Amino acid sequence: MKFYTKSHAHFCGIDLHARCLYVCILDAAGETCLHKKISASPQALMTLISPYLEDLVIGVECMFSGYNRIWCT
Image (spheres, rainbow, N blue to C red):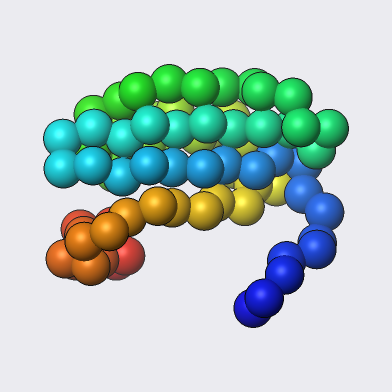
């Protein structure tokens, strides 16, 4: 997928580290809805993004492929 052009209500970018996540959520107009550092756990992430899940697309920056075992289940 070279370009993704579908509209969504919210867009989420996540910088994944071993002990923490940096999460940023923008609305369709590009305004910041949320920008927060949280612990690197699936539970913490789901709690944080749950209000936006109805129409949310997520992109994750991660250099180590071993994180797939934790996050891609």
